[in-house]
Length: 95
Image 1: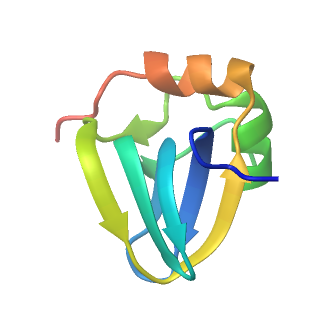
Image 2 (image 1 turned 180 degrees about the vertical axis):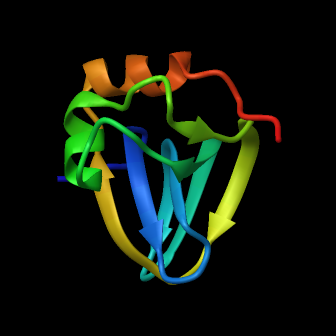
């Protein structure tokens, strides 16, 4: 089953956790479009729970970037429609 074109959460070794649409996958290298870095999540104990249900308003997500190349990907989790709606309504954190 291909995840290309689907909303996903990507965890990397050194670049953190990102949410976006999977555009390309080559080994441990991933390209996401409309990607937001998840700096801090609250309301879910694991990234699996974030992918299934989303987060609460205390979470901190970055602004969206049109495209990002991520190396050293160690986990790609498909995101449910409910979780995507939740993640997309969290305002960009500006601190």
